[in-house]
Image (cartoon, rainbow, N blue to C red; front, side):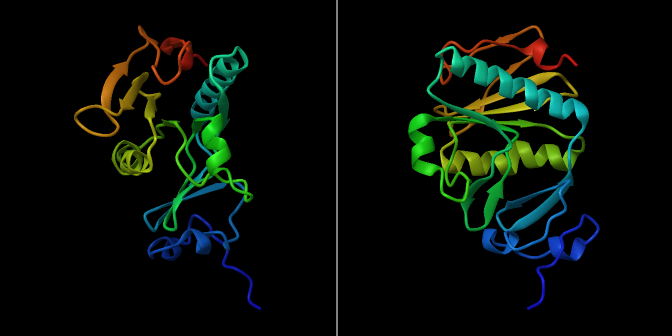
Length: 200
């Protein structure tokens, strides 16, 4: 039996076809490569910039501390696998998911098969990546039922917060700067001092 194809960043032919989650699961992916599937389109990236990972670490710690102090009954985790449908599987940078939803959507494969309550994405460099997070991923998260979506921009040191409004699902509600303290009705008692997110 032939072995599954090895997915490497220079094998562009593999990226230019329609994929399913089941097909991607059979690929041999290099350890330093993240693979996401967005409506059948495969994207590959090596591990992100050090500053990007520091922000992910801080926000994970902030949410986990809030949970331990009794602020929220649920789980905060960095970079979980989230399968939304047979053609879309993403790796958000940080999620918070309520205890009730964990029980409903965490499957035996160790992946979430449904929307977290909160999704946080930290922007990487490049206009294409930024557009993917701000538009394509936001649409997926909105359809799936994500309640709140934060886009953390380490270049402008801002956090865009998207929430469900009368205008529509996951509409930009506010942009928090380093002079701001961010709170959320979804996360009662959580206080995020935006300047501290970008300390390195």
